[in-house]
Image 1: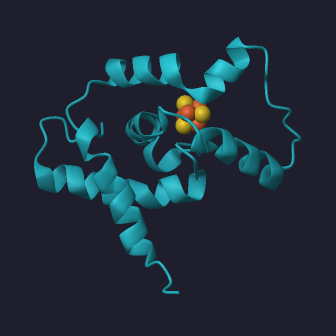
Image 2 (image 1 turned 90 degrees about the horizontal axis):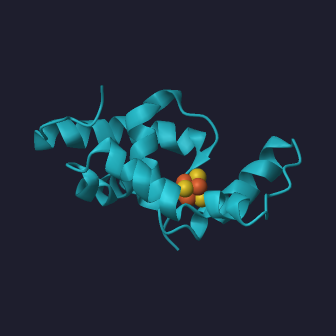
Length: 120
Ligand code: SF4
């Protein structure tokens, strides 16, 4: 089995977000708050039981995110709003991976010459 090149992995993730390039923040916010699995758990009174252990809680968050239909919109919004300052798990990625995706995502936006560039 071939090892996955981390550069390819992060490039692939960043490329999957190109579709959101021209989607306004408020629309992304609406998608995430309407469809986000984590928010539905709270609405339904099924709050995850957080342990306070970083590794365990990260795994639980990643499992919740993995089944979330708003996963990519959530990651796009997190990259726009927190960028390389992100904490926690967003779009099924731990903060380290979101931070690693950030410069790749930003580079794509700048190369594509989008009207917003995606980052303020
Ligand atoms: S990807 Fe994760 S953090 Fe984002 S809305 Fe979905 S469940 Fe919540």
